[in-house]
Length: 259
Image (cartoon, rainbow, N blue to C red; front, side, top):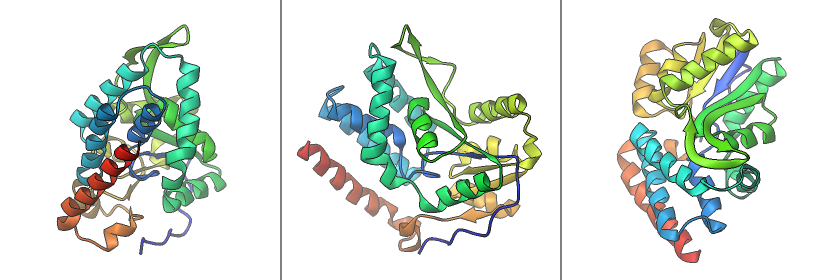
């Protein structure tokens, strides 16, 4: 069984939550791609490309090369479309795919911070359109995400800045803290990925959720709190994950055939 949610965490000024595999199971960019495919934005074969990247993400964790490739595909698909249309699709994708995958344990942690008077922000490499929807639906303070450029309400197919990944995510949080007057030594950050070590090491209370192997080792060496909310993590060992990926691949192929 997943670990129980611990007692209320120490009071902090703000808590920063990663999105994929921390607050939501899986990759929100893939769920977004499924929504776009269902609405005719691209083909089943192109969705299969997203599916393969999503499976690698689930098994191996976040990787910048895969992230950039998936991002470039997504930018190409939304280029020339109105921002209002894509944001509306984001709302629908939340209802169709994301809501059921929100981690109850991580959501409880976020809401306990809110109840204690702290700000709670999502900070993710996922599109800010999806991050905004998740933050609003969960009653969080706000969201930072990767921003696609638009002109006159239409996406250009380019990014504003760079993906919020690794050091870029930490830099965005630092800028937010300066803007809102947060003392980072009195803030918390939650993540599943060693890619977020720049952010985790920047705050006074780093917390690890559903960690990849590298982050689990890092947390153990430093005595950071670790929360495991994945039911399967308690039923299988890491050596069985390749088999689980095969089952996932069969499920994805079945979904694509039904579509």
